[in-house]
Image (cartoon, rainbow, N blue to C red; front, side, top):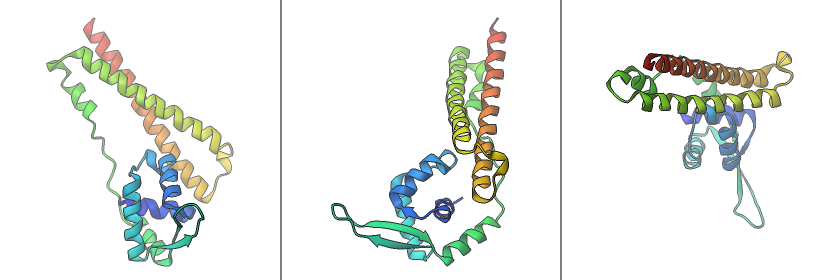
Length: 180
C-alpha cells in the first residue's frame, strides 16, 4: 500500500492540515501503517501536484499560513480505483520466529527473555487497542459506515495482538519446560 492511499482514506474521513493528518494517522492508521511527518508532507505535495487533493491556505497572524487539505474528485476516483485492487495476503515475517527456531544453537535464556520482551510489547499494544475500543465504540452493535469500518480494523488489531500474546505464552512455557 502506498502512503498516498492511507492519506486519501484519512482525508476522505476528515479534511485537515498536514500536522493534524500526521497526528490522526499516529493515533489510528499509524498502528498498522507508519510514516514520519516528513514523509506525510512530501506525499501531500505529490498528491497536490497530481490533483488528488486541494489545498486551502488559511492566514494566521502569528504563524505561517495553515494549509488545509481535502480530497478532490480525482483523489476520490483514485481511492475508489485502489480499493478494487487485490492486496497481497498478510505474511508473518518475524525475526523472533527465526530466533525461536534456532534456539537449540544458542542461549536459551536470552531467547526466552526476548520472547518475554515481545510479549510485553504486544500485551501493551493489546491493552491500548482494548482501551480505544471501550472509549470510542461503546455502541459497537449499532455501527455503520465509516465508524463500522474503523471498528473492524481495530478488531483486527485486537485479534492479532491477542494471538501474538498467546503464542508468546506458549513459547515461554515450552522453553521453560524444556530446560527442566
